[in-house]
Amino acid sequence: MTIETEILQNLEKLPESVKQAVLDYTEFLASRYTREFPQVEKTSKRGGLGIWKGKIWMSDDFDEPLEDLKYYM
Image (tube, rainbow, N blue to C red; front, top):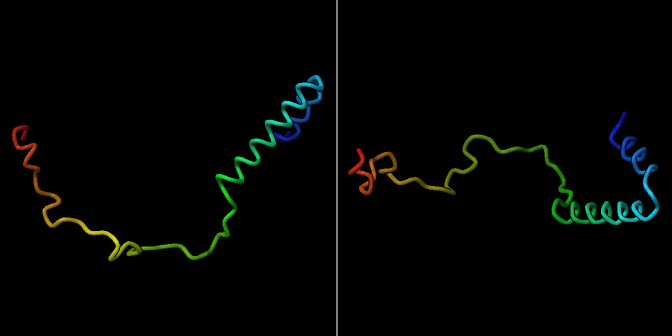
């Protein structure tokens, strides 16, 4: 049984006033979903190794102990 079938079966059991509330809520969810997650065309091209090259940098002393933590080491 699909989720849509289960929803419809439960919906048939509800009074008309609650069905209207369910309709309003589903319309709200649908508009919110399309606004927050617009459909974007998926491209088959994906990034691979080196896609961040030249866009970020790391300090040469990245692995060195921090001065602030010398007391604890």
